[in-house]
Image 1 (cartoon, helix red, strand yellow):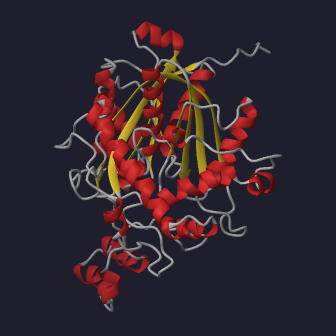
Image 2 (cartoon, rainbow, N blue to C red; image 1 turned 180 degrees about the horizontal axis):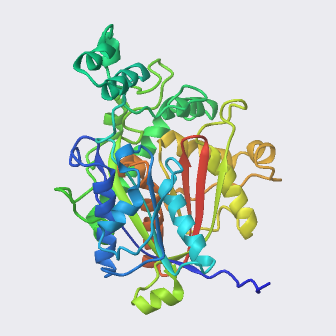
Image 3 (cartoon, helix red, strand yellow; image 1 turned 30 degrees about the horizontal axis):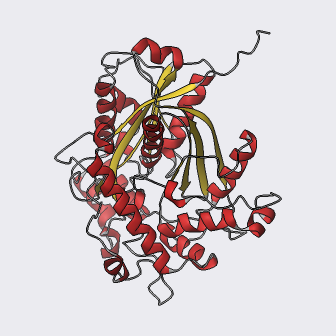
Length: 428
């Protein structure tokens, strides 16, 4: 047998994205393929990769149009990369592009490829509408008929309700609850008050606005299709305005999640270039950071009634243990803000002695985090959340923060639908 080679260091070399825009605004007429192609093309142009063959490209979306069945490969073919660059689709709900980065990084670490791209996209605006099974059967029968009479026969007895198309639903099959309804239960269990959620949301908007004003996003976000900035950032929002919003998921007096402290439906795409140190040097690219390790986890959110979005608490605990680190050993924390309440529940769980002992199997609480280090350039509540693209946005943001600092360590955490979580450690 040949001797196993030690894994290679994996550099995060660059990340780009198109502006994240609220659904049905700037990208209303564009689907996943157009958005993903734009993100990949911007990365290719920024890194001068036109005509070059990369080892692989992993990308995906949460809401998939069946007409775009080979999404990653088609996007690569339109990106300016050499047509010989392979690509594959993958999905892990909201952690899709974070998982894409991990998949490419693992190939680089093993020496299978020298460089690749992890990316993701979602276009809520162009989500495919579905017909009911009854309506689908009628269309199928009509398409297979050979005469006019036979083509009309399937429509005899059609009911008006069958004519109504069904939009995609982000609902958990196991519980029948959507993500917001599930997070309401988490907020109640962990006793996260509305005021604390609104304050967290305000902070996210203020940080995002400051980041745009300072030019932090200048080399991360590339103008596209009439948009040159993330259009959900609200620099003029206040606690008073946020407090005036009605609950969006639990409309009883107990409801605390609103449109203001939750992520909006968003269109967007993001991509990250990863490579070995030798490949980066040959291309004249300076690494922003290095992807050191990653961990995914899942929770039983139906039988055991664990919080749908609490899996990152487990993933981070395992990641820290494997790397001999504490929760406080980081300069930056990029935590996906599916909802302000979700982040606050996660932080409270890590601070809980009983949760860390009983659920995470630790002998003490992981402890608290310096909140000034969390999402320092704003998070998903302000920037928006195209499901498949958020992971790549977070990886790129964290890598650039470390590059700007010149050294340090960062923790990335993404909760996902289906009760899963994706976490990564980056260092420089």
